[in-house]
Length: 252
Figure: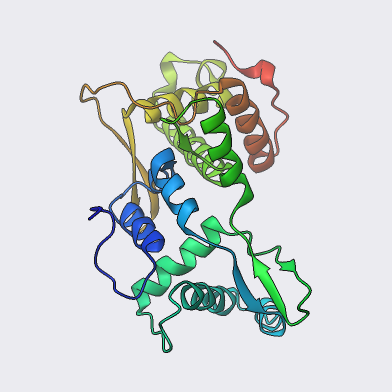
């Protein structure tokens, strides 16, 4: 039996795999990165699922997103486990099931059918497209990183750069030497990718820890397309810093 598929007897196997993947990682970014094989397994096992149209829009517009997502999670699991007439999820099972729905389904854009009382929720198209491109280009050893994950990482590294700046001895450097924000964010992402910086979740937020232990070559989850990464960095910091950085601000 696949070691990723164990414990809960009331969750579909794809949710169990996802649950074990994210619960075994303490890094808030790396837990959102999904390798080709795991993503392929999940996307091969999930299926579109029906929802009562009135129930969908009632929960969506009542203003409580948790109730809405709970309803979707129960609908999906009940549809997959057709023999389960009475389904009960404990708090942890519900947490991972909701996370699964938000991650792997286009739940905000349901599809209408000829049955006017039913709408269908379909799997994430971007993920399916990623898998198809991997197979087409024979790149089966890369991981899926969505834009929201990349944005989180850039924001974390921007905050870390500010922390470094506030704590460095400025007697030896000028401000121009110290605070080229785009370049320093890129440098820290490269260090994180190589494993020299680690992220840990704390009560105060996400902490950055330096780890200088020698390590093997790491997969390039973020810097495989350096030009795309640079543009993402510029877009994010211009938004959060109200700046006017351009791609030309990067120093090689």
